[in-house]
Amino acid sequence: MPGSWKASRRDLLVGAGVSVVWFSPAAAAQDAIFVMTEIASGKVQGLVDGPILEFRGIPYGAPTGGRNRYMPPQAPAKWTGVRDCFAGGDAAPQEMSDFRSDYFAITQWDRKLGGGMSEDCLSLDVWTPSVDRSAKKAVLVSFHGGGFYGGSGNAQLYEGKFLALFGDVVVVTVNHRLSSFGYLNLEGLGAPDRFKYAGVAGMLDLVAALRWVRENIESFGGDPSRVMIFGDSGGGSKTSVMMGMPGAAGLFHRAAVQSGSLLRLQSQAAATAIARDTLNHLGIAASNISDIQKLSWKQILAAQSVVGSKRFGPVVGTDAIPEHPFDPTASKYSANVPLIVSTCLEDMGIGAPDYDLDEAGLLSHLEQRFPKRGAEILALYRRRSPGARPFFIQAQAVTDATSRPVAETQALRKAALPGGAPAWMYEWDWRTPAYGGEFGAVHGGDIPASFHSYRDAFFAGGASGKLMADRLASAWVAFAKTGDPNCPILPHWPAFEPVHRATMIFDDDTRVEDDPRGEIRAYWEAHPASAAVAG
Image (cartoon, rainbow, N blue to C red; front, side, top):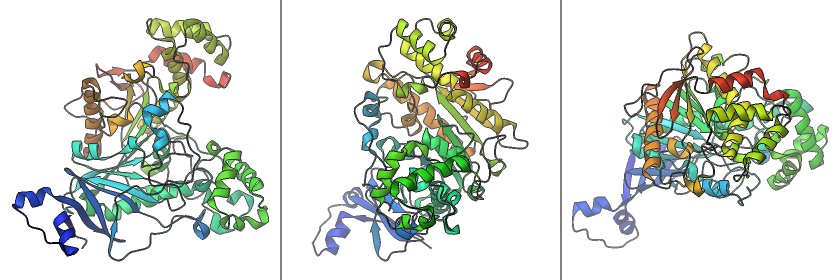
Protein backbone atom coordinates (compact mmCIF):
# COMPACT_ATOMS: atom_id res chain seq x y z
CA MET A 1 0.00 0.00 0.00
CA PRO A 2 1.28 3.51 -0.75
CA GLY A 3 2.69 5.20 2.32
CA SER A 4 3.82 8.66 3.32
CA TRP A 5 6.55 10.43 5.19
CA LYS A 6 7.91 13.90 5.82
CA ALA A 7 11.51 14.79 5.06
CA SER A 8 13.19 17.54 7.08
CA ARG A 9 16.18 19.67 6.21
CA ARG A 10 18.12 17.38 8.57
CA ASP A 11 17.29 14.33 6.39
CA LEU A 12 18.60 16.09 3.33
CA LEU A 13 21.77 17.37 4.94
CA VAL A 14 22.57 14.04 6.55
CA GLY A 15 21.99 12.32 3.24
CA ALA A 16 24.45 14.74 1.67
CA GLY A 17 27.11 13.89 4.28
CA VAL A 18 26.57 17.01 6.38
CA SER A 19 26.59 16.65 10.16
CA VAL A 20 23.55 18.23 11.80
CA VAL A 21 22.89 18.59 15.51
CA TRP A 22 19.37 19.26 16.78
CA PHE A 23 18.81 20.96 20.13
CA SER A 24 15.26 19.72 20.64
CA PRO A 25 12.60 17.54 19.04
CA ALA A 26 10.41 20.61 18.64
CA ALA A 27 13.03 22.32 16.50
CA ALA A 28 13.25 19.25 14.27
CA ALA A 29 9.48 19.12 13.87
CA GLN A 30 9.30 22.79 12.91
CA ASP A 31 11.96 22.21 10.28
CA ALA A 32 9.91 19.78 8.19
CA ILE A 33 9.83 21.17 4.68
CA PHE A 34 9.06 18.22 2.42
CA VAL A 35 6.37 15.57 2.38
CA MET A 36 6.11 12.41 0.31
CA THR A 37 3.32 10.04 -0.61
CA GLU A 38 2.97 7.22 -3.09
CA ILE A 39 0.48 7.02 -5.95
CA ALA A 40 -0.08 4.51 -8.74
CA SER A 41 2.66 6.06 -10.91
CA GLY A 42 5.31 6.29 -8.19
CA LYS A 43 6.40 8.37 -5.23
CA VAL A 44 5.76 12.11 -5.27
CA GLN A 45 7.32 14.73 -3.02
CA GLY A 46 5.63 17.99 -2.16
CA LEU A 47 6.20 20.98 0.08
CA VAL A 48 5.03 21.63 3.61
CA ASP A 49 3.33 25.05 3.60
CA GLY A 50 2.46 25.59 7.25
CA PRO A 51 -0.45 23.28 8.05
CA ILE A 52 -1.08 22.50 4.37
CA LEU A 53 0.82 20.04 2.17
CA GLU A 54 1.21 21.10 -1.44
CA PHE A 55 1.89 18.86 -4.46
CA ARG A 56 2.02 20.63 -7.83
CA GLY A 57 2.49 19.43 -11.37
CA ILE A 58 1.54 15.77 -10.82
CA PRO A 59 1.00 14.09 -14.21
CA TYR A 60 -2.36 12.36 -14.60
CA GLY A 61 -1.81 11.67 -18.30
CA ALA A 62 0.95 11.24 -20.85
CA PRO A 63 2.14 14.10 -23.11
CA THR A 64 -0.46 14.87 -25.80
CA GLY A 65 1.84 15.66 -28.73
CA GLY A 66 2.87 13.56 -31.71
CA ARG A 67 0.92 10.30 -32.03
CA ASN A 68 -1.03 11.18 -28.86
CA ARG A 69 -2.36 14.39 -30.42
CA TYR A 70 -6.17 14.30 -30.74
CA MET A 71 -6.24 10.90 -29.09
CA PRO A 72 -8.00 10.10 -25.81
CA PRO A 73 -5.64 10.77 -22.89
CA GLN A 74 -3.12 8.04 -22.19
CA ALA A 75 -1.92 6.93 -18.77
CA PRO A 76 1.23 8.66 -17.49
CA ALA A 77 4.46 6.69 -17.52
CA LYS A 78 5.46 5.27 -14.16
CA TRP A 79 8.70 6.41 -12.59
CA THR A 80 11.23 5.07 -10.16
CA GLY A 81 12.60 7.04 -7.26
CA VAL A 82 10.84 10.17 -6.03
CA ARG A 83 9.31 12.80 -8.31
CA ASP A 84 9.53 16.39 -7.02
CA CYS A 85 6.15 18.14 -7.37
CA PHE A 86 7.03 21.66 -6.33
CA ALA A 87 5.64 23.76 -9.22
CA GLY A 88 2.61 23.74 -11.50
CA GLY A 89 2.89 21.85 -14.76
CA ASP A 90 2.73 23.35 -18.22
CA ALA A 91 -0.51 24.88 -19.41
CA ALA A 92 -2.05 23.79 -22.69
CA PRO A 93 -0.95 25.74 -25.78
CA GLN A 94 -2.95 28.96 -26.00
CA GLU A 95 -2.71 32.58 -27.00
CA MET A 96 -1.59 35.08 -24.40
CA SER A 97 -4.13 37.34 -22.74
CA ASP A 98 -3.99 41.12 -23.11
CA PHE A 99 -2.89 42.44 -19.73
CA ARG A 100 -3.91 46.06 -20.42
CA SER A 101 -7.19 46.23 -18.55
CA ASP A 102 -8.25 46.82 -14.98
CA TYR A 103 -10.21 43.57 -15.02
CA PHE A 104 -7.21 41.50 -16.04
CA ALA A 105 -5.18 43.32 -13.42
CA ILE A 106 -7.55 42.39 -10.63
CA THR A 107 -7.77 38.76 -11.74
CA GLN A 108 -4.05 38.57 -12.66
CA TRP A 109 -5.25 36.46 -15.58
CA ASP A 110 -2.14 37.23 -17.61
CA ARG A 111 -0.12 35.31 -14.97
CA LYS A 112 -2.00 32.07 -15.54
CA LEU A 113 0.63 29.92 -17.21
CA GLY A 114 2.77 29.07 -14.20
CA GLY A 115 5.12 26.32 -15.37
CA GLY A 116 5.04 27.23 -19.06
CA MET A 117 3.19 26.01 -22.14
CA SER A 118 3.41 22.72 -24.03
CA GLU A 119 1.48 19.61 -25.03
CA ASP A 120 2.77 17.93 -21.88
CA CYS A 121 -0.12 19.60 -20.08
CA LEU A 122 -2.07 16.84 -18.36
CA SER A 123 -1.16 17.62 -14.78
CA LEU A 124 -2.88 18.60 -11.59
CA ASP A 125 -2.12 20.25 -8.25
CA VAL A 126 -3.20 19.01 -4.83
CA TRP A 127 -3.46 20.85 -1.51
CA THR A 128 -4.28 18.81 1.56
CA PRO A 129 -4.05 18.97 5.35
CA SER A 130 -2.89 15.34 5.54
CA VAL A 131 -1.47 12.41 3.59
CA ASP A 132 -2.96 9.90 6.02
CA ARG A 133 -4.87 7.41 3.87
CA SER A 134 -7.45 6.95 6.60
CA ALA A 135 -8.28 10.69 6.83
CA LYS A 136 -11.14 10.44 4.28
CA LYS A 137 -11.53 14.17 3.72
CA ALA A 138 -13.96 15.57 1.15
CA VAL A 139 -12.37 16.48 -2.18
CA LEU A 140 -13.03 19.61 -4.25
CA VAL A 141 -11.85 19.52 -7.87
CA SER A 142 -11.70 22.89 -9.65
CA PHE A 143 -11.96 23.28 -13.43
CA HIS A 144 -10.37 26.56 -14.47
CA GLY A 145 -12.06 29.33 -16.41
CA GLY A 146 -11.16 30.79 -19.77
CA GLY A 147 -13.91 29.24 -21.85
CA PHE A 148 -12.73 26.16 -23.71
CA TYR A 149 -9.85 28.14 -25.21
CA GLY A 150 -7.60 29.50 -22.46
CA GLY A 151 -6.60 29.55 -18.83
CA SER A 152 -4.79 27.23 -16.48
CA GLY A 153 -5.27 25.61 -13.12
CA ASN A 154 -1.98 27.30 -12.21
CA ALA A 155 -3.61 30.74 -12.13
CA GLN A 156 -3.42 32.49 -8.77
CA LEU A 157 -7.22 32.63 -8.65
CA TYR A 158 -7.26 28.88 -8.06
CA GLU A 159 -4.67 28.48 -5.33
CA GLY A 160 -6.17 25.83 -3.12
CA LYS A 161 -4.35 26.06 0.20
CA PHE A 162 -6.71 28.58 1.80
CA LEU A 163 -9.79 26.44 1.14
CA ALA A 164 -7.96 23.27 2.21
CA LEU A 165 -7.12 24.91 5.53
CA PHE A 166 -10.49 26.59 6.06
CA GLY A 167 -12.57 23.51 5.34
CA ASP A 168 -10.19 20.70 6.29
CA VAL A 169 -10.62 19.35 2.76
CA VAL A 170 -8.50 18.28 -0.20
CA VAL A 171 -8.41 20.71 -3.16
CA VAL A 172 -7.37 19.74 -6.69
CA THR A 173 -6.87 21.96 -9.75
CA VAL A 174 -6.44 20.58 -13.28
CA ASN A 175 -4.75 21.46 -16.58
CA HIS A 176 -6.09 19.95 -19.80
CA ARG A 177 -6.17 20.43 -23.57
CA LEU A 178 -7.87 23.55 -24.91
CA SER A 179 -9.29 25.03 -28.10
CA SER A 180 -8.11 23.33 -31.31
CA PHE A 181 -5.91 20.92 -29.33
CA GLY A 182 -8.89 19.65 -27.35
CA TYR A 183 -11.86 20.14 -29.66
CA LEU A 184 -10.95 19.70 -33.36
CA ASN A 185 -13.74 17.60 -34.86
CA LEU A 186 -11.75 15.57 -37.39
CA GLU A 187 -14.29 12.76 -37.49
CA GLY A 188 -16.60 14.84 -39.66
CA LEU A 189 -13.86 15.22 -42.29
CA GLY A 190 -13.48 11.50 -42.83
CA ALA A 191 -10.49 11.02 -40.51
CA PRO A 192 -9.37 7.52 -39.55
CA ASP A 193 -11.40 5.97 -36.75
CA ARG A 194 -8.65 6.59 -34.20
CA PHE A 195 -9.50 10.32 -34.41
CA LYS A 196 -13.09 9.66 -33.31
CA TYR A 197 -12.71 11.61 -30.06
CA ALA A 198 -10.67 14.57 -31.35
CA GLY A 199 -13.68 16.83 -30.88
CA VAL A 200 -14.02 15.97 -27.19
CA ALA A 201 -10.40 15.26 -26.19
CA GLY A 202 -10.26 18.16 -23.72
CA MET A 203 -13.29 16.85 -21.85
CA LEU A 204 -11.91 13.31 -21.86
CA ASP A 205 -8.86 14.78 -20.16
CA LEU A 206 -11.06 15.94 -17.30
CA VAL A 207 -12.65 12.50 -17.05
CA ALA A 208 -9.13 11.06 -16.85
CA ALA A 209 -8.29 13.54 -14.09
CA LEU A 210 -11.31 12.38 -12.11
CA ARG A 211 -10.30 8.77 -12.62
CA TRP A 212 -6.90 9.71 -11.25
CA VAL A 213 -8.65 11.24 -8.24
CA ARG A 214 -10.65 8.07 -7.68
CA GLU A 215 -7.52 5.91 -7.83
CA ASN A 216 -5.05 8.12 -5.97
CA ILE A 217 -6.72 10.69 -3.75
CA GLU A 218 -6.58 8.48 -0.65
CA SER A 219 -2.80 8.96 -0.77
CA PHE A 220 -3.52 12.65 -0.10
CA GLY A 221 -6.01 12.03 2.70
CA GLY A 222 -9.02 12.31 0.41
CA ASP A 223 -12.27 10.39 0.18
CA PRO A 224 -12.95 9.17 -3.39
CA SER A 225 -16.63 8.76 -2.51
CA ARG A 226 -17.05 12.49 -1.74
CA VAL A 227 -15.77 14.40 -4.78
CA MET A 228 -17.19 17.78 -5.75
CA ILE A 229 -16.44 19.35 -9.13
CA PHE A 230 -16.88 23.06 -9.68
CA GLY A 231 -15.79 25.97 -11.81
CA ASP A 232 -16.53 29.55 -12.78
CA SER A 233 -17.16 30.78 -16.33
CA GLY A 234 -15.47 28.26 -18.64
CA GLY A 235 -14.96 26.04 -15.59
CA GLY A 236 -18.70 26.13 -15.03
CA SER A 237 -19.28 25.21 -18.66
CA LYS A 238 -16.93 22.24 -18.29
CA THR A 239 -18.79 21.21 -15.14
CA SER A 240 -22.05 21.44 -17.11
CA VAL A 241 -20.63 19.17 -19.82
CA MET A 242 -19.33 16.65 -17.27
CA MET A 243 -22.91 16.25 -16.03
CA GLY A 244 -23.78 14.78 -19.44
CA MET A 245 -20.82 12.42 -19.92
CA PRO A 246 -21.49 8.71 -19.34
CA GLY A 247 -17.79 8.09 -18.69
CA ALA A 248 -17.81 10.57 -15.80
CA ALA A 249 -20.77 8.99 -14.03
CA GLY A 250 -19.83 7.94 -10.51
CA LEU A 251 -16.52 9.82 -10.54
CA PHE A 252 -18.02 12.90 -8.82
CA HIS A 253 -20.84 13.26 -6.36
CA ARG A 254 -21.64 17.01 -6.19
CA ALA A 255 -21.25 19.79 -8.76
CA ALA A 256 -21.35 23.59 -8.83
CA VAL A 257 -21.60 25.87 -11.87
CA GLN A 258 -20.61 29.49 -11.30
CA SER A 259 -21.57 31.91 -14.09
CA GLY A 260 -20.90 29.26 -16.71
CA SER A 261 -24.15 27.41 -17.31
CA LEU A 262 -24.23 25.52 -20.59
CA LEU A 263 -27.26 23.72 -21.98
CA ARG A 264 -26.19 22.72 -25.50
CA LEU A 265 -22.90 21.85 -27.20
CA GLN A 266 -21.55 22.31 -30.72
CA SER A 267 -23.22 20.26 -33.42
CA GLN A 268 -21.22 17.89 -35.58
CA ALA A 269 -21.88 20.09 -38.63
CA ALA A 270 -20.71 23.33 -37.01
CA ALA A 271 -17.63 21.69 -35.49
CA THR A 272 -16.73 20.05 -38.81
CA ALA A 273 -16.81 23.44 -40.55
CA ILE A 274 -14.40 24.86 -37.96
CA ALA A 275 -12.11 21.85 -38.35
CA ARG A 276 -12.12 22.30 -42.13
CA ASP A 277 -11.06 25.94 -41.74
CA THR A 278 -8.24 24.85 -39.45
CA LEU A 279 -6.91 22.22 -41.85
CA ASN A 280 -7.06 24.73 -44.70
CA HIS A 281 -4.88 27.15 -42.74
CA LEU A 282 -2.48 24.32 -41.96
CA GLY A 283 -2.34 23.23 -45.61
CA ILE A 284 -3.48 19.69 -44.79
CA ALA A 285 -5.82 17.87 -47.15
CA ALA A 286 -8.67 15.83 -45.74
CA SER A 287 -7.11 12.76 -47.34
CA ASN A 288 -3.94 13.29 -45.24
CA ILE A 289 -5.43 14.21 -41.86
CA SER A 290 -2.89 12.09 -40.01
CA ASP A 291 -0.23 14.61 -41.05
CA ILE A 292 -1.57 16.91 -38.36
CA GLN A 293 0.26 14.75 -35.82
CA LYS A 294 3.58 15.58 -37.52
CA LEU A 295 3.36 19.35 -37.09
CA SER A 296 4.70 21.34 -34.17
CA TRP A 297 2.16 22.60 -31.67
CA LYS A 298 3.29 26.11 -32.54
CA GLN A 299 2.07 25.67 -36.12
CA ILE A 300 -1.31 24.50 -34.90
CA LEU A 301 -1.57 27.34 -32.40
CA ALA A 302 -0.78 29.87 -35.15
CA ALA A 303 -3.54 28.43 -37.36
CA GLN A 304 -5.93 28.38 -34.42
CA SER A 305 -5.36 32.08 -33.82
CA VAL A 306 -6.44 32.82 -37.40
CA VAL A 307 -9.48 30.56 -37.30
CA GLY A 308 -10.49 31.94 -33.89
CA SER A 309 -9.62 30.25 -30.61
CA LYS A 310 -13.04 30.87 -29.10
CA ARG A 311 -14.84 28.96 -31.88
CA PHE A 312 -13.72 25.59 -30.52
CA GLY A 313 -15.65 23.60 -27.93
CA PRO A 314 -16.85 20.09 -27.12
CA VAL A 315 -18.95 18.37 -29.77
CA VAL A 316 -22.11 16.38 -29.17
CA GLY A 317 -22.77 13.10 -30.95
CA THR A 318 -20.19 10.50 -29.90
CA ASP A 319 -20.58 7.94 -27.16
CA ALA A 320 -18.40 10.23 -25.02
CA ILE A 321 -21.07 12.95 -25.10
CA PRO A 322 -24.13 11.40 -26.76
CA GLU A 323 -26.59 14.16 -25.80
CA HIS A 324 -26.66 17.80 -24.83
CA PRO A 325 -26.11 17.99 -21.05
CA PHE A 326 -29.17 20.11 -20.21
CA ASP A 327 -31.33 20.12 -23.32
CA PRO A 328 -34.15 19.24 -23.57
CA THR A 329 -33.76 17.96 -20.00
CA ALA A 330 -31.04 17.57 -17.41
CA SER A 331 -28.86 14.55 -18.12
CA LYS A 332 -29.76 11.16 -16.71
CA TYR A 333 -26.06 10.36 -16.26
CA SER A 334 -25.79 12.74 -13.30
CA ALA A 335 -29.33 12.40 -11.99
CA ASN A 336 -28.12 11.59 -8.48
CA VAL A 337 -25.62 14.47 -8.33
CA PRO A 338 -26.82 17.58 -6.43
CA LEU A 339 -26.03 20.86 -8.19
CA ILE A 340 -25.40 24.49 -7.26
CA VAL A 341 -25.95 27.05 -10.04
CA SER A 342 -25.07 30.73 -9.78
CA THR A 343 -24.67 34.08 -11.50
CA CYS A 344 -23.13 37.39 -10.53
CA LEU A 345 -25.38 40.44 -10.48
CA GLU A 346 -23.24 42.32 -13.03
CA ASP A 347 -21.70 39.27 -14.75
CA MET A 348 -21.58 40.81 -18.21
CA GLY A 349 -19.64 43.83 -17.03
CA ILE A 350 -16.57 41.73 -17.80
CA GLY A 351 -16.33 42.88 -21.40
CA ALA A 352 -17.43 46.50 -21.03
CA PRO A 353 -14.71 49.07 -20.25
CA ASP A 354 -17.07 52.06 -20.08
CA TYR A 355 -17.12 52.30 -16.28
CA ASP A 356 -17.79 56.06 -16.48
CA LEU A 357 -20.94 55.62 -18.54
CA ASP A 358 -23.50 58.38 -17.90
CA GLU A 359 -27.29 58.18 -18.12
CA ALA A 360 -27.42 59.39 -21.73
CA GLY A 361 -24.74 56.90 -22.72
CA LEU A 362 -26.65 54.13 -20.95
CA LEU A 363 -29.83 54.91 -22.86
CA SER A 364 -27.90 55.00 -26.12
CA HIS A 365 -26.29 51.63 -25.37
CA LEU A 366 -29.64 50.02 -24.53
CA GLU A 367 -31.25 51.42 -27.68
CA GLN A 368 -28.41 50.08 -29.79
CA ARG A 369 -28.47 46.64 -28.26
CA PHE A 370 -32.25 46.36 -27.88
CA PRO A 371 -33.73 48.50 -30.67
CA LYS A 372 -36.94 50.42 -29.88
CA ARG A 373 -36.92 49.11 -26.31
CA GLY A 374 -34.10 51.04 -24.68
CA ALA A 375 -36.29 53.55 -22.86
CA GLU A 376 -38.67 50.95 -21.41
CA ILE A 377 -35.74 48.77 -20.31
CA LEU A 378 -34.09 51.71 -18.60
CA ALA A 379 -37.35 52.59 -16.83
CA LEU A 380 -37.73 48.98 -15.67
CA TYR A 381 -34.28 48.92 -14.12
CA ARG A 382 -34.54 52.40 -12.64
CA ARG A 383 -37.69 51.40 -10.79
CA ARG A 384 -35.71 48.66 -9.12
CA SER A 385 -32.39 50.51 -8.63
CA PRO A 386 -32.99 54.27 -8.82
CA GLY A 387 -29.50 55.21 -7.63
CA ALA A 388 -27.37 52.57 -9.35
CA ARG A 389 -24.47 53.63 -11.51
CA PRO A 390 -25.31 53.53 -15.24
CA PHE A 391 -22.52 50.99 -15.84
CA PHE A 392 -24.12 48.62 -13.34
CA ILE A 393 -27.52 48.95 -15.03
CA GLN A 394 -25.95 48.20 -18.40
CA ALA A 395 -24.17 45.11 -17.06
CA GLN A 396 -27.30 43.85 -15.29
CA ALA A 397 -29.48 44.27 -18.36
CA VAL A 398 -27.12 42.34 -20.63
CA THR A 399 -26.73 39.63 -17.99
CA ASP A 400 -30.49 39.36 -17.48
CA ALA A 401 -31.03 39.14 -21.24
CA THR A 402 -28.38 36.52 -21.95
CA SER A 403 -26.61 34.39 -19.36
CA ARG A 404 -28.91 34.57 -16.32
CA PRO A 405 -31.88 32.90 -18.08
CA VAL A 406 -29.55 30.05 -19.11
CA ALA A 407 -28.48 29.54 -15.48
CA GLU A 408 -32.08 29.51 -14.26
CA THR A 409 -33.09 27.10 -17.01
CA GLN A 410 -30.26 24.79 -16.02
CA ALA A 411 -31.34 24.82 -12.37
CA LEU A 412 -35.01 24.32 -13.27
CA ARG A 413 -34.26 21.38 -15.55
CA LYS A 414 -32.12 19.81 -12.88
CA ALA A 415 -34.87 20.30 -10.31
CA ALA A 416 -37.45 18.80 -12.68
CA LEU A 417 -35.56 15.57 -13.33
CA PRO A 418 -37.76 12.76 -11.93
CA GLY A 419 -36.15 11.16 -8.90
CA GLY A 420 -33.06 13.32 -9.28
CA ALA A 421 -30.96 15.16 -6.74
CA PRO A 422 -31.86 18.79 -5.95
CA ALA A 423 -30.43 22.03 -7.24
CA TRP A 424 -29.66 25.25 -5.38
CA MET A 425 -29.33 28.73 -6.85
CA TYR A 426 -27.34 31.75 -5.69
CA GLU A 427 -26.72 35.26 -6.98
CA TRP A 428 -23.49 37.07 -6.08
CA ASP A 429 -24.43 40.71 -5.42
CA TRP A 430 -21.40 41.75 -3.36
CA ARG A 431 -19.55 44.49 -5.21
CA THR A 432 -15.80 44.44 -4.85
CA PRO A 433 -14.30 47.69 -3.48
CA ALA A 434 -11.22 47.23 -5.69
CA TYR A 435 -10.40 49.93 -8.23
CA GLY A 436 -12.77 52.37 -6.59
CA GLY A 437 -15.68 49.97 -6.88
CA GLU A 438 -15.90 50.39 -10.65
CA PHE A 439 -16.49 46.70 -11.42
CA GLY A 440 -19.57 46.02 -9.29
CA ALA A 441 -20.52 42.37 -8.71
CA VAL A 442 -18.62 41.41 -11.82
CA HIS A 443 -18.04 38.05 -13.49
CA GLY A 444 -15.62 36.00 -11.44
CA GLY A 445 -16.04 38.09 -8.32
CA ASP A 446 -17.09 35.02 -6.36
CA ILE A 447 -14.10 32.86 -7.39
CA PRO A 448 -11.83 34.00 -4.54
CA ALA A 449 -14.65 33.52 -2.04
CA SER A 450 -15.20 29.93 -3.16
CA PHE A 451 -11.48 29.35 -2.53
CA HIS A 452 -11.62 31.31 0.74
CA SER A 453 -8.89 33.53 -0.66
CA TYR A 454 -9.88 36.80 0.97
CA ARG A 455 -6.39 38.27 0.51
CA ASP A 456 -7.20 38.28 -3.21
CA ALA A 457 -7.43 41.67 -4.93
CA PHE A 458 -11.23 41.36 -5.13
CA PHE A 459 -11.35 41.47 -1.33
CA ALA A 460 -8.04 43.12 -0.47
CA GLY A 461 -8.11 41.58 2.99
CA GLY A 462 -11.01 43.76 4.13
CA ALA A 463 -13.36 42.66 6.89
CA SER A 464 -16.42 42.64 4.61
CA GLY A 465 -14.58 40.60 1.99
CA LYS A 466 -13.39 38.11 4.59
CA LEU A 467 -16.94 37.64 5.80
CA MET A 468 -18.12 37.01 2.23
CA ALA A 469 -15.32 34.47 1.77
CA ASP A 470 -16.33 32.78 5.03
CA ARG A 471 -19.92 32.55 3.84
CA LEU A 472 -19.42 31.13 0.36
CA ALA A 473 -16.53 28.87 1.34
CA SER A 474 -18.62 27.49 4.21
CA ALA A 475 -21.37 26.60 1.75
CA TRP A 476 -18.78 25.01 -0.55
CA VAL A 477 -17.31 22.91 2.23
CA ALA A 478 -20.72 21.82 3.55
CA PHE A 479 -21.80 20.88 0.04
CA ALA A 480 -18.61 18.91 -0.61
CA LYS A 481 -18.94 17.04 2.66
CA THR A 482 -22.69 16.37 2.72
CA GLY A 483 -24.24 17.21 -0.65
CA ASP A 484 -26.20 20.09 0.95
CA PRO A 485 -24.84 23.69 1.11
CA ASN A 486 -26.72 24.59 4.28
CA CYS A 487 -24.41 25.55 7.14
CA PRO A 488 -24.61 27.59 10.38
CA ILE A 489 -23.11 30.78 8.93
CA LEU A 490 -25.93 31.15 6.36
CA PRO A 491 -29.71 31.50 6.63
CA HIS A 492 -31.62 28.38 5.64
CA TRP A 493 -31.13 27.80 1.90
CA PRO A 494 -34.06 25.96 0.28
CA ALA A 495 -33.57 23.97 -2.92
CA PHE A 496 -34.52 25.71 -6.17
CA GLU A 497 -37.86 24.83 -7.76
CA PRO A 498 -40.21 26.59 -10.18
CA VAL A 499 -42.81 27.85 -7.71
CA HIS A 500 -40.69 29.83 -5.24
CA ARG A 501 -37.31 29.98 -7.07
CA ALA A 502 -35.54 30.40 -3.72
CA THR A 503 -32.17 32.09 -4.31
CA MET A 504 -29.39 32.85 -1.85
CA ILE A 505 -28.27 36.46 -2.33
CA PHE A 506 -24.62 36.76 -1.28
CA ASP A 507 -24.09 40.35 -0.18
CA ASP A 508 -23.29 42.25 2.99
CA ASP A 509 -26.88 41.38 3.90
CA THR A 510 -26.75 37.74 2.80
CA ARG A 511 -30.31 36.43 2.59
CA VAL A 512 -32.71 34.15 0.72
CA GLU A 513 -35.22 35.70 -1.67
CA ASP A 514 -37.93 33.98 -3.67
CA ASP A 515 -37.65 34.83 -7.38
CA PRO A 516 -35.48 37.86 -6.56
CA ARG A 517 -35.62 39.41 -10.04
CA GLY A 518 -39.13 38.28 -10.87
CA GLU A 519 -40.32 41.41 -12.69
CA ILE A 520 -37.13 41.62 -14.71
CA ARG A 521 -37.16 37.90 -15.45
CA ALA A 522 -40.74 38.13 -16.68
CA TYR A 523 -39.82 41.04 -18.97
CA TRP A 524 -37.01 39.13 -20.65
CA GLU A 525 -39.14 36.01 -20.99
CA ALA A 526 -41.65 38.15 -22.89
CA HIS A 527 -38.91 39.89 -24.90
CA PRO A 528 -36.16 37.31 -25.48
CA ALA A 529 -32.71 38.60 -26.27
CA SER A 530 -32.63 36.59 -29.49
CA ALA A 531 -34.67 39.39 -30.97
CA ALA A 532 -31.94 41.90 -30.06
CA VAL A 533 -28.98 43.10 -32.07
CA ALA A 534 -25.83 41.22 -31.08
CA GLY A 535 -23.36 43.40 -29.24
